Length: 387
Image (cartoon, rainbow, N blue to C red; front, side, top):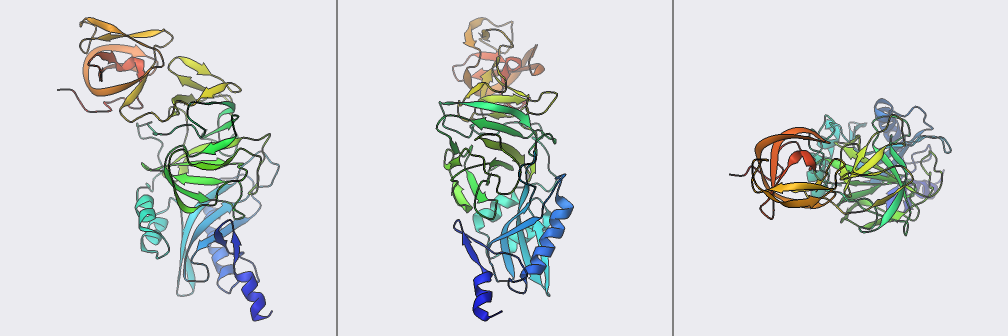
């Protein structure tokens, strides 16, 4: 092979990022990088089926310090989905040290990497090395991944990233103008090496969201995106494998570098619930229930000191002048209303959809409502204790 031929194989510009084909014709170090990353993926993967490992070097190609994405591919047409990770690697004494997203090695390698930005180092440092779901705090600060104030269909309720696997982290959403938007601000990455179909956005508080099957998606390699930023259109892309029955976005929730159950979390004003089987879970806004095939109105992101009134089947919830039913009535608030919470205090005990509690929340208008009839995402005060 001539020198010019080797150069042509060394790098291919794909969707704005440098994707290095790791083949026998690539630069000498690349096959060992492929092997090192593949070995890591083989230990980390949970896919039942796989059709190879894709290694996409997006920064530092041809040097001893690289960063990129790697995907455990699955066959196209199968009811499964690929698995993907950000990765970092460093060549030491002729051997590649590799860390996958969520591993201690990833944090250490990115912290010392000259090709990783200071902002990314801080972001990756927020990830826990022991994945856990919520930890008692189900607030996400996320909207649904389409325009606020519009409604889309939910063809599939809570289900696994790969379909029927657990946890049920994903939803299928479709409709409207078809534009898929970032659920919360963060840092975006294109996962598939050809730049098509799959975007991951890493947010604050350890959360991330995945968007698969996109058509005409943006190119992202550590791109800062704001809430509501256009990511792509609903589609049927399966560039990294799997299947799609009709245009939609396969939207999934991650926390601490792993998929987590979306049930109990509030996204766009809806609290999602599992069913006995995948795809059949429902969504709640107050006492309003939506089932698969029905429309979800995007209420926008719920603030961290806000709550949604849930009359547990009733139309309104009484407000009081103090934290208990021994205080005078001070009006009522309708089921499904978003309220601002000033502080909280213990009072008389009550039971609602989310259990029994003696906690009462003082609203911004000075009145009080029982926490039993409100979704806040916490069983403890969301804005401190009232004096």
